[in-house]
Each structure stands twice: as structure tokens, then as C-alpha cells.
Length: 353
Ligand code: NAD
Ligand code: GLY
Image (cartoon, rainbow, N blue to C red; front, side):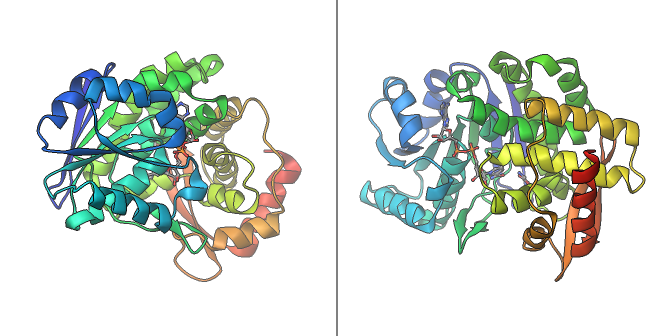
């Protein structure tokens, strides 16, 4: 068992526990501290795990959203809040979010809003949610066609991470989580070395289950130092500006696959601007291995640059802010204008590096 604690500047404390049999033991024990707990999940996860939850936790009020990013909306948020109100949830009760990043983000926001904030327990069931979204208290829904436009920081009271959930994940969702794991590798040498040493078993869920705690420890360190993304936490945006642009334009791959592509491209941009070429080439090899061996076709460079301009992280019109890998365990912020970024993408597309 591994446990981690995050306390942010508003003294919200989050206890994160990685262990097997989480439903029967840690979660069941935590719920004894509440008069009532309301479970939020999605239809796919509930079909797979609902019966097991019932056996471990007994009868609980449950609300299931349809699965998928398309439902990460204010409508789903308010439907959940209505179900919580109908169940008579009180300020001292808690909301248990059982699912991937979508359930975690919507449920976390509902917990933050309901009666001005109730406790939230995250039980992440995807690789991405276990290594990234359940840790750190970012919550949101998509709005006006912009991802995560409406949200708040609300640290979960507990995060319970059980590797058993990974055994039912489709290959595409495994790749999706790998995107964030490789990103962590670009920032944390220990994770990078472990990934390089296990390059031929990157999608083996038993290997992934072993490295989840290492990723949680890394992310918890970053969030502990900068919970509200004033500075250091920006490092977690590595590869994401390009990833979000491609996701917006193309949308056929998973978020994590776009993060792998974004990290690959931004490593090339960094190498051309004084980054450590030998290390960045190794990072690119890792991105390719995680993508299954090849880089998918890139969208048109000019269109990608226009899409990258819409990113929330940008500081001004026509400027694109990138968090790029620079050397082993090091990153830097680069600001390019739209034309410069488009030229870089076109060059990388031509040269294939
Ligand atoms: P998701 O929640 O949509 O889950 C992906 C799919 O896997 C869904 O169809 C789901 O039903 C299914 N699923 C979940 N657990 C399963 C299991 N154990 N077995 C089989 N199927 C399972 O997607 P995700 O990739 O987990 O999360 C993506 C979301 O996370 C995005 O909305 C993104 O914005 C958000 N995110 C948030 C943060 C944060 O810090 N809050 C960080 C990264 C990403
Ligand atoms: N996933 C980026 C962050 O939590 O800051």
C-alpha cells in the first residue's frame, strides 16, 4: 500500500491511497464516517462494477451519466445536482465518484457546488484518472465548445486507487493514460528510466499497475508545491498545447494519444532551440513506442496553429505558449507567434523528426 497527502493553501487536505481491494476495505471504512454517501458513475463503469460496489458498500443512492466526453456538460452537472438534492444529501454527507476523468471532473465540480461544498471521494477507474485527473483537485465541465471552461479547484477528501480496475480497460484507454505517464516521464527522471527499461511492456496492465504509485507520488509533489497552478504546476501542461489543438481539429484519437503526439512535436521544437538533442530523441522514441510504433498523420500546420491560438494558456492574441521538454527532468516555457509555430509543424512534418 502507498499513501500520499496533499494540503493546499486553503488547508483542504487530500489523502491518496493506492492499494488492492479498495472497495471492500479503505472505501468502506471511510464511508462509516458519513451519515450518507451518494455514488456517481457512468453507465459503462456501473455495468462493469456496480454489483461489486453494492456488495462492498451496501445499498447507496446512485446516479449514472452516459459515458464519454460528449456528456461532460452543464446539463449532466445539473442532473447530478438534482439527483443529490432528491436523495436529501446534506452538507456533511459525501459524493463518491467511481469512473474515469469525466466522472471525476463532473462529480468533483458537483461536490464543490452542492451546499457550497461537500466532501468528495474519488475512485478512479481509468489509467488516466489514476495517474492524473483524480489527483490535484481540478474539476470542470466543458462549455461553449471549450474544454474544461467552467470549473473550480476542490481537493477530494480521499482518492482510492485500485489497480484491479485497469484489467477491464480497452487498449485505447490504456494508451490514453500512457500519454500522461510519458509526460510525467519527461518531467521526472525516475519515471523516464522505468519507462525506457520497460519499453516492450508499456501496455501491459500489470506493469502499468506497478508504476501508478510512482506517477501519483510525482503529481502529488507538484500539486503540494503549487495547488492553484500559479507556477510549477504549469509543467504538467507539457505537450498539451499541441495536443489540444490536434484534438480540436481532428478528434479521432484519444486525449492521451494527442498528448504523446504533442510531446513528440514539442520535443522537436525544443531540440531546434537549444534543447538536449540526445535526450529529446530518446523521449521521442518513448512517445512512438507508446503510440504503437508510428506517428499518425498530422493535421494541416496552418490550421493547427490557428487552433493552438485558442488555448487557455496563451497570454495574448497570436501568441502560442508551449511547455516543452528541454533536457532530462527539465522543461521550459516557449512563446511562439502563430506563423513560427506553423513553420515548425510543417518542418517536422517534412523532416519526420
Ligand atoms: P473517461 O472518463 O471518458 O473514460 C474513458 C472510457 O473508459 C469511458 O467510456 C468509460 O466509461 C470507460 N471506463 C472507465 N473505467 C473503465 C474500466 N475500469 N474498464 C473499462 N472501461 C472503463 O475518460 P478518461 O480518459 O478517464 O478522462 C478524460 C477526462 O479527464 C477529460 O475530460 C479530461 O479533461 C479530464 N482530465 C482531467 C484532469 C484533472 O486534473 N482534473 C487531468 C487530465 C484529464
Ligand atoms: N492535468 C494537469 C493538472 O492537473 O494540472
